[in-house]
Length: 474
Image (cartoon, one colour):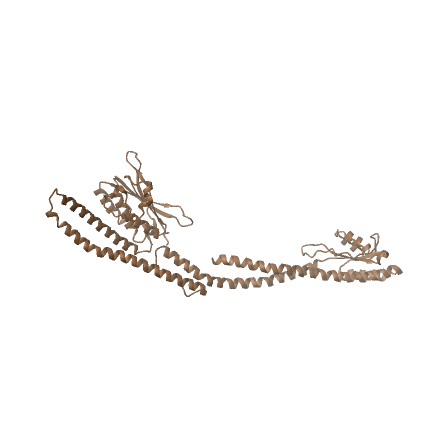
């Protein structure tokens, strides 16, 4: 944002300086040319007066010497020509040499011989190399007998214009340099609270609700914004903490009464007839109490895991080293096979609560909720995602019955359970909590088709955890 602000301000300043400097530069150039033209006009006016007297009296020697002396001093050929264009007085060779390179000369001479004073021929632009041709008629009205013509080289004048332009450009650069020198620290001071607020928002989006913005730096308006942001985050953090505390406390307070109730119900078992109606009611009550205890355990686990909202880098090899053997034992007990195909050296951002806990939940779902014979754990690195550093995708696949595509979005909602799993122990919280924790680390939990089922009748179920890659130097 800092650079973008300067990219906007500096070109605007350049345009402003150019809008003021270009007309001034044009005016300077036109004034220099105008002064030169007026000077030449005075000279040819004087020479025309002398030429009229000399031609009328026939005494041209003095005028000839004066024109030669003028050419010697200033390098400007001056000639007196008659109505046919023939040079009567002046340095004939120098005049003809200069005249060959001036296409505007015939037009100006013709206008002067007609008794009018033509406009100057020289262009004020420094890159134009044409000379300044000035002509003055000798005589008046119908008595014009000739014209005095000067051809002035404007190279020195144009060099002077370039020098003046360079001076103006240097003066124009001073405010630009001053603006840039002032705009850089001022814009940094103005935008620093915005950058800090953006960084704080990013950390909060990753789950760190303790982050606060600096409300002591920057302009007054941004300090007020930072204070309002901090006040809002205080309210949000307090609300979240109260919610988590309520879930944890309620689960804890309900645990003892629920345990006492279960013991009381189970104590009735010796007094029930084996095949009586009371036995069925007793079994239903015990099952409901067990389900309620599992629900309370899940709520407490959820509150504990969600209280840890910071993600940190972790080596996938280290996580698997503490889990794989236990997974193999569980799958072997269930009569299933576990395969692990994970490349070595993968480093990723671990979700709050631990990556191992999430993988434990996914393995548990594969064992409990399907008739799978094979469970596969694999990992791969995907390409960059929208300018990020890529992701590590960890997939837990099985060849069991899976769930329908239409049910996959609902499976990530809390307390949702598939109709096929109503009689299977569970609370419907596991996948939902995992998805929230993975999202808090900037990742994603997807549900996909799993391994092909035996007999070719469809696919099993797969849960894919995608987490940001962390470089080894981080």
